[in-house]
Image (cartoon, rainbow, N blue to C red; front, side, top):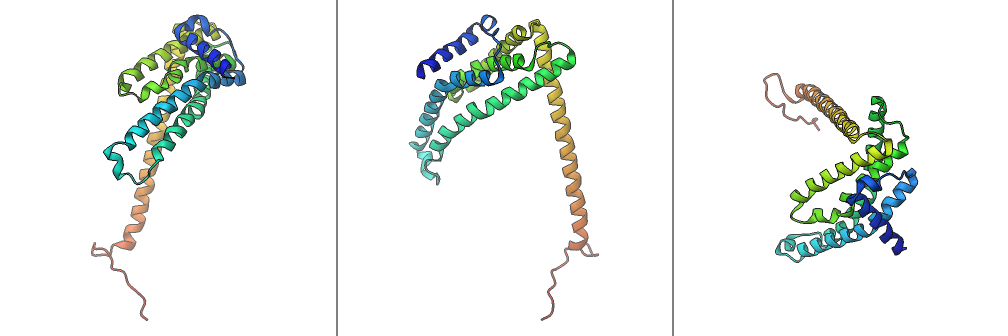
Length: 226
């Protein structure tokens, strides 16, 4: 089994280094996710080892002496990488692919099916997923933007190969999708904030007459006569 993981990890690295040549294969949804999990199996182990090293260093420091939850960092160092790499990223892949495909369909650009878009998004996750352990390093502010740009390059070339469009068209789809999603989230957040503020104001207005007397002071509590 480990031989398969090594082979798939090499294919993931090939996608990273030569995305123009290695993102042409379309995978079915199940096969795409299976390939992703096989590629990221070894990187996940490395990520957990790095996270455990950080947690161990923390608990060996004087700061940990005041911690009342001994071992919590060790548990988090194991659970959080698994949750992030094998749950959150796969969910993000599906949602991102769906949004790209919907927007591109609205624009009339993508002619291929959803599996092609999903395959492209899976390919694009190779740089950050394989080297996710580097984000634990102190140089995260330098490393993170590099992998973000690298991921975008792989995504554009993969979408170009999968949907048979120019990379500039793929870039337009990505940008419009980001703009639309940002606008929707902003409007939704603003509407929620306004609704919450309105509800809070109504609640306060409803309670004040019961708490404040006619003289403007807090009405003292009264108790029934025994």
